[in-house]
Length: 366
Image 1 (tube, rainbow, N blue to C red):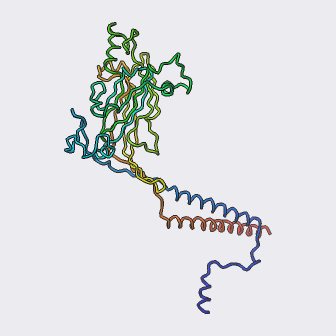
Image 2: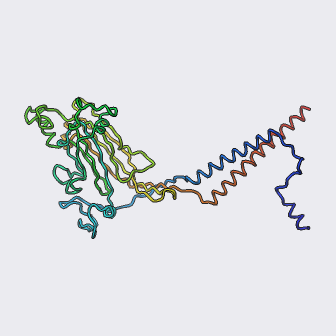
Image 3: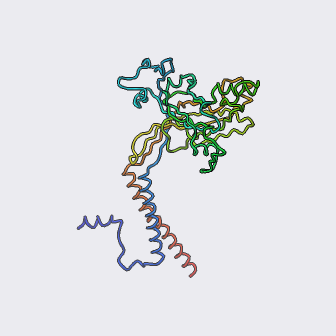
């Protein structure tokens, strides 16, 4: 009996005798408000626990051995002498991972230059000299006349406004495809072919030669307006926008000749997904700068560059890691208890202060 009395002395949840506490409308409203606030905070805490948060960190990027383009194709610098592992081919995705390669995807439309007058290349290996085909295969990049939708997009036309009496998709070209490239800096180009450029400039300069870009009787310089549907390196990073997607480049100078020079800095990014999505994704974020090289500059510098599109890319020595994480269950449980209990304690304290203040004021008035 003595121990029971001592134990009752520690009871912090003593209830008043029924009828000794007056129930009021204001008290009911305050209680309802407390329940609503506690419920909202409870749901918010559950949502934050399920969704988690993204934590960022910065580290040094992984160092990798690379390859060089020899007469027989890509040759690893790690002693492999260009030979692929047993049972694997150059198109094997596992082999590309072993050689530290990443996919480079290109989709660009030139609405005013025919496919016969376009050339493309990677790291100096051009389609016109067959080095590109030797390095990446015959069908790595495909050139086709643009579809009507691609043509409309490239010229900023409203969908469905293509008029075959005024426009000809055969006068343009779309370059699309994917190649595997080493994880080192490089360059990608889609330009007017050297032969087509020489034909056009020779006729316009000296009045001699077969004529225009397509060998016809109407000499003209190439209009290098183009539309970049997408240029991507590796898998797209879902938390940021790729600046090399849906990018229009309309050349506004009188001749229509220009070189769109793009420099892309690629930041290796590791994205660790939550347990709801699962998996780790190795991606790249791109920081892009660009400028238009006008024909006067190309001519004054006697540059070997041709009008069109040139992309130079390099990899940052720093890597970013994004981790979707959440607190432990005990931390989550403690937060819930703190929120629910804290709401009622806070409301009780504020209500008590207001009631005591009202009583004090009433006594002074009396």
